[in-house]
Amino acid sequence: MKRYIVFLSVIVCGLFCVKAETLTLEECRSRAIEYNKSLSASKLQIQKQEADLKAMKTNFLPNFKVFATDFYNTGKTTINPDLSTKFASGIANAQAVLAQMASNPAYAPLVTGIKSIANGFTLPDDFLEFKVGNVFLAGVSFIEPLYAGGRITAGYKMNKLGVTMAQNKVRLSEQEVLLNTDQAYVLCIRAKEMGVVARSYKAVLDELKKTVDNAVKHGMRTKNDVLKVQVKQNEAELNIIKAGNAYRLAQMNLAQVIGVPLTERIDVTTDGLYIPTDNGVQLDGSTDISQRPEYDLLNDKTELARLQIKLTRSAFLPNLAVFGSYSYLNGMKLMGERLFNNGSATVGVVLQVPLFHFGEGIQKVRSAKAAYQITQLEQQELNEKMQLELLQATNQLQEAALEVNVTNKSVEQAAENMRLSKKQYEVGTEPLSGYLEAQTLWQQANASSVEARCNYLVAYTKYLKARGGK
View 1: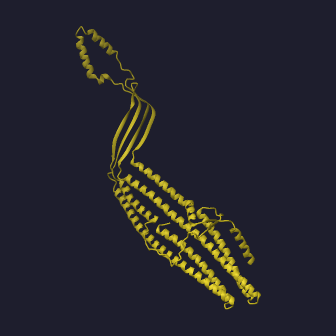
View 2: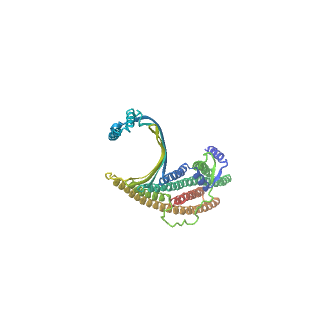
View 3: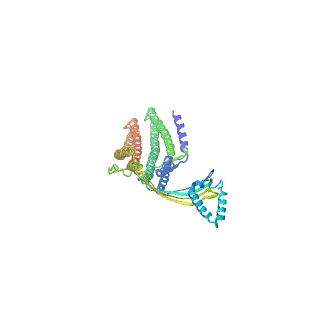
């Protein structure tokens, strides 16, 4: 068993002989924020919301369009009216005038010539022929909303809130990343400190082993005492191996959080970490949660529900817009001549007024108002829960600080107890079992002190998150 433990110790020693990079908590926090993918996605969401906001802002401006159409049509029609029917009265008057002129011998030759010309006159077959042929139409148009029932304004404010909510979600994600990083970092510190405690306990046992060996050599102690110490040494060596394995796993967990390869060696330090040394920490017991991103998100969500009422109502209000266009038309022929080859402008106003929807608008607005009231109630409930969470975090931090102070005193007392027990053992007034028990109590007190300090660090991070800080 002893050879097995020594073999494992050599392996662990070989693993940890690799030079490790020492990182502070702030460095790990910075790397975790830079590496975390969900946080990166939240930051991209801000860019998306900002783009949506800019797109929504364009609804306040005119909407210009360019259009063009070109087609060819073989259709045609011919207008060939019967003039004798269309102009019967005119023809009769002309004939009367000619009859009067014919009674005068001086005009007789002229009248005869006019009649011969009229009798030989006929309309051509393609008279008033209309062809479609090739037609080209192009132009530019615009429409500018003057009043849309508040839809554009409400939509713009909702998109603006979307940007703010995305920013608050990034703050919330950062706090969660920092909390996970702190917990992973503290886990490394705990495993490392536990290794220190285990090795210190082993060193104390090794010293005791030498003392007992000398005592046995001079016949002052029995072999049984040596075996008792060896059992404790084996336990201590096993604890060293367990602490080493725990430290390596904690390193890998921290590496995963901050985005470095799992095979990379990293070390942690307590430099810059605040550990209370007095009788605790003094907190004001405030329940102010206004700095928390969740608080702002709830406010934004409630405001979003209020704007949704306006947006719903706008669908059933009048809409007024002004429009205009300028177009160019080329095409169509009449009697072989092109009819259109010019441009034209148009300006107008369009008004749409919803009249009757069988109460649809009223019911939809009522639904939006109910959703707004639900959001208000949820906001009140969650705010109360966050205040309770802050009070709990405050109490836990104060308790953790007191625990640190108590365990520190326990370490001092256990060390003094072990010193006195050693002195008494050396003069023969205390049995070996009593001295071993004093060493065990010292080891347990140190382990409890490590646990208390690590618990305090985690409690402090949770307190900051509950308060809305970092």
